[in-house]
Image (tube, rainbow, N blue to C red):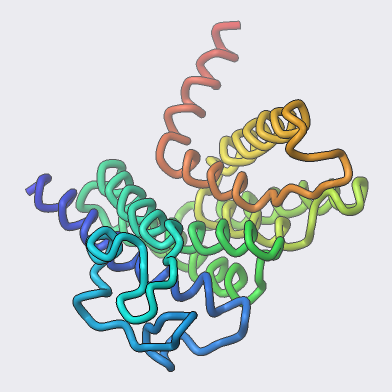
Length: 252
């Protein structure tokens, strides 16, 4: 049964990842997710069903459109494989529990937020606000007795980033604040782990880019991907890290 769960999660992730590619491309442009159907952005030819199989079609076509030969970016299979991997990790963490559905939805939103932020330096309200509302509702439905924890965690994480945005204009956007709200609503107390991981990873990457001359102090680096990665870490191993840290404090 576990093999069925993990293999099914991976395949579902590939399919959902294919759809997320559409979301990532169209939502910032305010285009419909339904019409027109999948098509080549260069020649506008509709993509045949057998050319729209996640990852496999890209490999068979060697990353090119069948009709015009235009290059199809590697991001498309990357998003599909990333989503599949996250869905499988979610299955490993939650098993057959209903919490798995929340993790799948959470991961899907984080993938969308990450790549839109990389492309446009934007975290869109029409993505994170509905996701935050649904995430809070799902969290409370799964564990009604902890409703207060999810509310406090979400508002606390958002307030923390909002204060940073006030003290450091341009260093933190309101989109990051709203993303932090989503993280807290879904993770509860584990948002502490997510925030710590986001700032740690963001700091390491930022310093590395500056040291390597790939970015200057004036260049902006999107923080959404680091918050998303922190959210993934918090959702998968946040409980273990919190228990370890509390034990460490007790030992000291």
